[in-house]
Length: 422
Image (cartoon, rainbow, N blue to C red; front, side):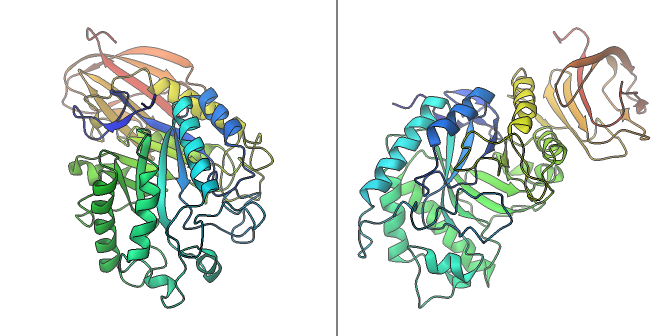
C-alpha cells in the first residue's frame, strides 16, 4: 500500500488530493532523466524535494532520451550517454523490460512514495531531431519521426502494457501520454486520436491512475481532443489559460517552465500567476539538478535557458508553505476582483477570502472590487512570504477602490472579509 496516494478531488475536481486531502502539486524538479540515467542519484534528489516540501516530479519512461549536445543545458540528466543508459528492453524482440530497468523503476517509485512525491510518468515524447529518433528503442526506420504518433502500433502498445504493469503497486503515479505532442508532427488530428486510444489503453491496464494530456504551450483552450484525459497539462503557462479551461472541470497544471533565463524571478512569477489563477500544480524544470549535484547546485549558470537551484528552492518552498495554509476546496478564478495594470491573478477561496498576486506594481494603479462589506487586507513579501502590512478596507460594491501596496515590485495579497475567521 502506497504512503502517497494521488487522486482528483470530488469536492473540487480542479484539484488533486494526496491521501484524501486536497493538495496543490508544487515542485522544482529534475529534467526527467532519473530513470534512464543510472548515474543520477535519485535518493539524494528525493531528499532535496522532501526537505523543501516539493511533492511532484516528472519521469520519462524510456522511449525517449537525449544527447548531451541537444540543448543549451549545463548538464542534462536526460542525456545519460551510452555508458550510463539504463536499457528499456531485455532483447531485440522488445517483449520484456530489461531487469535493470524494472528494478530501477520500482526503486524510484518507492523512494518517491516514501518522500511524499507524486511521479508523473511520461510514456512518450516527440522526437525533436533525427538523433533523438535514431537513439529511441522504439525507432522504426519505416516511419518518419513526424508521423510516429499517427497510429498506435502493436509494438507501442506492448511497450505501454509492459511499463504500466510495473505501476500496479504504486498509487503515487500520474500517467502522461506524450510530452509536447504539438511539436514535430505533420498532422494534429491523427495525433489526437493516438492519444485518445492511448488513454483508453491506460484505463484498461492501470485503472485508477490519473491520465494527463499535455495540451499546448502558453495559452490554449483544450477543446475535446482527448476526452479520456483527467488532467490538462500546459508548458510555460499563462494565467489566462486556467480561465479558458476552467469549465473542463479537471486539474490544470503548469507542468514545465523555462526559456526565460536562469534568474529566479521569472519562475517565481510564473508559479504565483499560475497557482493564483486556479492551476492545480506548478512544476519548474530545474537544470540545477545534475549527475554531479543531484540535490541541486546553488544556481543555474547565467548561460542556461532554464532556472532553478537551491536559492530558487528556498523561494518556492516558502510559496508552497504559504499556499498550504489555505483551503482550496471552494477555490475558483476571480479575475474580476483585482484589476491592476500589470500581469496578475486572483483566486476566490469562498467565504469572502481571496488571494491575489501582481508581478509588477511600480507606477501602476491597483484596485479591488469586492462585495459590500469590511475586509482585512494582508500584504506579504512574495519572496519570503513574510507579512509586511495589514489594513482594513471597506467596499460598497459600486466601484473599484484603489489600494496601495507597502513596497513597489511584486505584490502578494490576502483579502478576508471581517468576521469570517480570517
